Image (tube, rainbow, N blue to C red; front, side, top):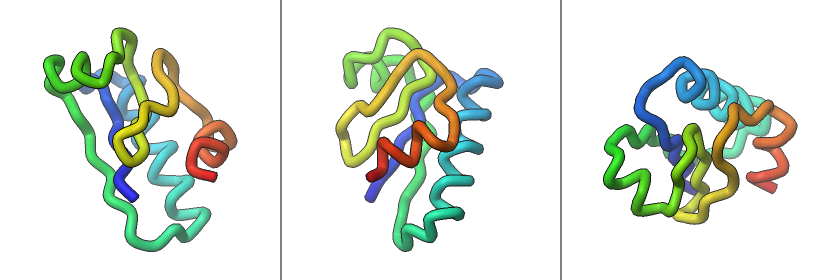
Length: 77
């Protein structure tokens, strides 16, 4: 599974990345790759106009806010 955090590097983007890492650790999901995409062209390529956003295996799961741990768990279910 590849999880991408889309965002230019603001504090909200970093908080979302921390939340994703916490979920991956809590659920012991095994071989998970986490990437942080900061290039606006790539972010727009996903159709995301409001960051931060979460992409799981190339599918946008949510955008425009810092998702909490429980919301991320639902995205990965």
